[in-house]
Image (cartoon, rainbow, N blue to C red):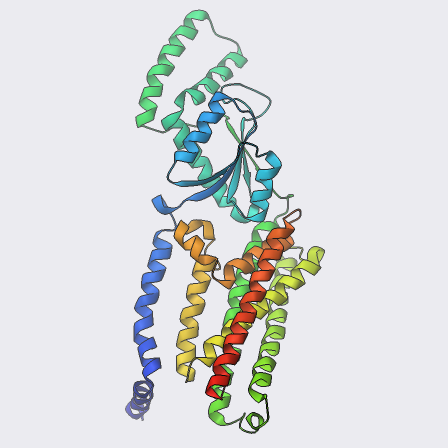
Length: 401
């Protein structure tokens, strides 16, 4: 019985040419795509997007802005009239990964650090990475700034004599030349850090709640939509298809069920995040509910469109697995998108995952831009409508589901 059972499965696979091709072509293709994604999630291809506001407008801050803008490992958004509120807004809305506010001259010792690093709790690691970038760039291009801060510290402690000052100046000049070729120095109190959001441990988890929710909704919606193929094979819809407009009603009925199911599943994910990690989605229940319905609609429409183009359950399962994995990786459900190379970050905006994460982030973040939230809603609804119309068109053309 062992070999006959294996032979039956082999013959079934060989007869289904579409499933056969997907079973042996898609795995290496998935490997190539994932290798491109995760091998570039670090190193030279990791390019953080930084928003900068130069409030001090001094020669040293202008030089730092120029250094940052010319650095190939960074993407910089800079405007001469940008304020600290502008940068904080960009960080809240996810338009940039983090912000830099240059508050005073880098060579002057003030009440606080001249450079303020503004981070988002969901992208906290970006702040640590940027601090390392600043340390390296200051060491290579502006070592005199850090040494001046050290000198200010010495003078504040007890002062130095004129002879000591001459010796220190000569030593600093010599060390500055060495530092350009060996960038290993501390930031000498130049940089402070703060979050763009009120202090709440749930902010970081809220990103992953949205990312996991949309990926799970995709998987669950596909499993529900695959039932179309099985029901068609078993002849469940033979009687229903006899009436006028039956195909459209069946597709819409499936769509509404999947939307309702996805909304409940997303609610369960966020309920767990609320109970275990303090993600307070109830405080923004209206925007959260609208986002959840839009996400459920987009994932349900995509699942239906994948299933109507497949002629067998095997084809649908292989194709849907491939699509869900790729969308989740490129859209930020598996790894935060700022880890991805810029071209893949741009490609990610074609996925429902990226817009779902953006919508949840804007819905749950106090003071976020309504424009960002409405844009995400509109695109998710457009994705849902487009996928649903595609499913209806294919089904009506075939005169079957």
